[in-house]
Amino acid sequence: QVQLVESGGGLVQAGGSLRLSCAASGSIFSINAMGWYRRAPGKQRELVAAITSDGDTNYAEILKGRFTIVRDNAKNTVYLQMNSLKPEDTAVYYCNAEFGMWSVGTYRTFEVWGQGTLVTVSS
Image (cartoon, rainbow, N blue to C red; front, side, top):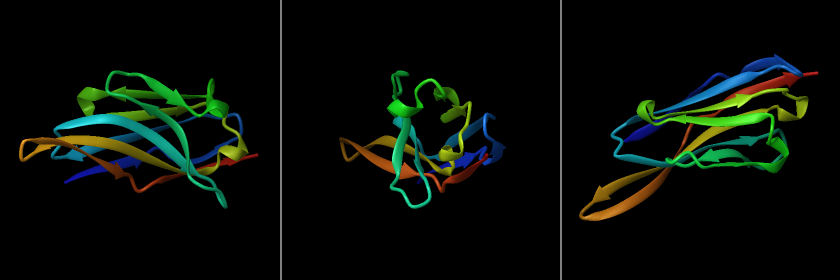
């Protein structure tokens, strides 16, 4: 069993910064991509940013330049640095990771989601 535990959410004023952390724990063989998604009130969940085990990143176009995703493979942790926050960034932010494992001679992958952390940006 593996799990993702997020931290770092909270209330911040517009223009401020927050850093989210997501740590993976449990019986981990390998972690492929890790990422952050968010769901704003009344909206669908959307990709914020993702990062591969090699450090290749992918960002939502509208967030480029303000958000930065970083990964520490030694700690099985991914971070999301959010700067110049806007009220429209208010959302529940979810960590996501694709894990890999060998099972009966076959390499399998599976996805795990964190419980979410609320980020509220006041105007």
